[in-house]
Amino acid sequence: MAKKSMVNREVKRAKLVKQHASKRAALKAVINDQAKPVEDRFKATLKLAEMPRNSSAVRLHNRCQLTGRPHAYYRKLKLSRIMLRDLASFGQIPGMVKSSW
Image 1 (cartoon, rainbow, N blue to C red):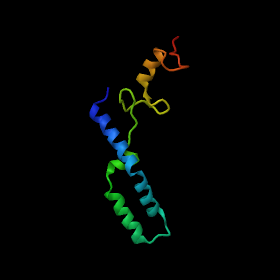
Image 2 (cartoon, helix red, strand yellow):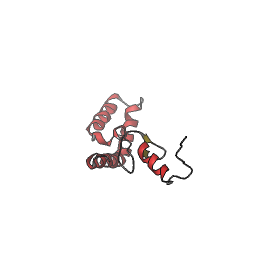
Image 3 (cartoon, rainbow, N blue to C red):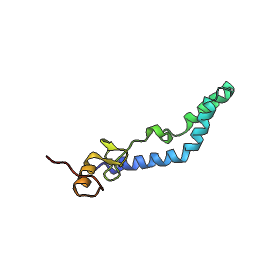
Image 4 (cartoon, rainbow, N blue to C red):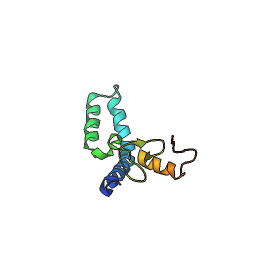
């Protein structure tokens, strides 16, 4: 089980990303538009830099929904490998059977 503070930090980051997504996209569109004057693009760059760092989607890290484990994460199932194995062993995941030979 991951520390609660780390899980809460990721939740806070996800909330910030969602909150600032449209504003960041608008600023990035201005920055990448070569037709705009250099001064406007530079001002947009400064405004983007003033925004909270945690509002960037790049700073999000995938975590297991059940345990909060950050490593060995399956995106399709949103679970870590350990929880995937446990749930498969108990028959909780349809169509998945733990192999043994």
